[in-house]
Amino acid sequence: MPTAANLLAIMPFPDIDPIAISIGPLAIHWYGLAYVAGILLGWAYARRIAANDSLWPGNRSPLSKTQLDDFIVWAALGVVLGGRLGYIFFYDLSAVLRDPVRAVEIWNGGMSFHGGLAGTTIAMIIFARRHAIPIWSLFDIVAAVVPFGLFFGRIANFINGELWGRLTDVPWAVVFPTGGPFARHPSQLYEAGLEGIVLLLVLALFVYGMRALKSPGFISGVFVCGYALSRIFVEFFREPDAQLGYLLGTSWLTMGMVLSSPMILLGLWAMLRARRQAALQL
Image (cartoon, rainbow, N blue to C red; front, side, top):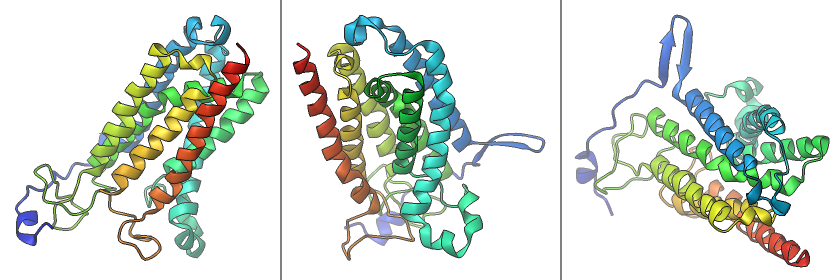
């Protein structure tokens, strides 16, 4: 158990300005840049995957570059609207009911991955039906590139000094400006590494090494299951949202764990379904 003495001995985190670029009245925040970087890199990677016919069933890509370009706007709206509504519903509903204006104050609370996932899923379903694109293949190509956004989003969380971890005295502990005088786990970096870098590499292995896109839905299952396992693991090091705290009277159960646990079953189901469908077509 860390003591106050060794917690206070750790160097404080540099107070980085959340505004990355300021030109006159125009202020660009790190969080905004993270969204842009994640979307642009994800889009570029998705175009590369879509252009490689040999990765897909029948050696033919299910969507054109034009369709993929058009979908970017849908995806961005799904992420932003779903992410904000998800945060309100899962983490901040009582406060918004007291003060509805708080709903549009994105800087006051933030976004929810699970809400963004729901919003993007709805956008994918509508877009796929309108353009006659196989829905599971669209799910797969989006799943393969989402880790870009997760990585940059968590790095922005770290720069902003938000969503920090629990108290610790590990050598790499950080004293965040808004986290009190004690050192904490840099849980944002744990998430950036697991949900971003590791998950991206695992998905790339399945896409290029195992040609898993030929089994529509399998990559989606790997992503959903991989994200859930990563998130649940990091939740043991991450401080829960102050307005919720730990759930059910425990000292460990968080909303992130509750929302992520069903995703493991969903991911496993998607992988099994994909393999079963592929076997039937042999």
